Image (cartoon, rainbow, N blue to C red; front, side):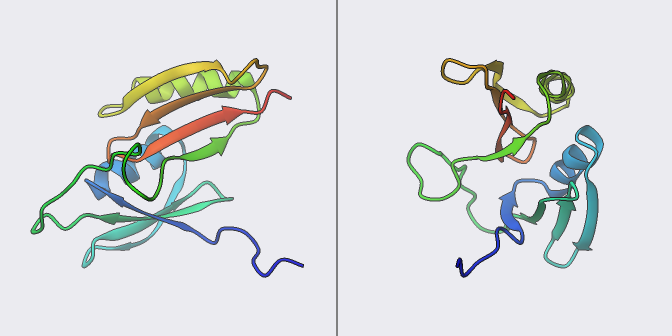
Length: 133
């Protein structure tokens, strides 16, 4: 028997809370909850996973995360239901202001799985993956 039951939430630091919340709500259709302007922080959810988003403190030196040399979050992956959904999301993401596309949907290994990776406007590296079945 496992002692845990999965992720309750994933806490992420972002460059600009409003931009990141807007991306998840307006581009991906997630819902926002729990905004606290005093930190500042908020949460977003797709109904299955919840992200807590914390804006960095600009009174301190800010360092961009480099997934190749820093310990911590390399990326997080969100699964989609179909190849068509992956392609539709990819187009929405591509056209969203401030997004940095690493690569658009492509085969993962020999396929049929496909995925894409990008950074949302607040800097978080995200993968969308269609498992190919």
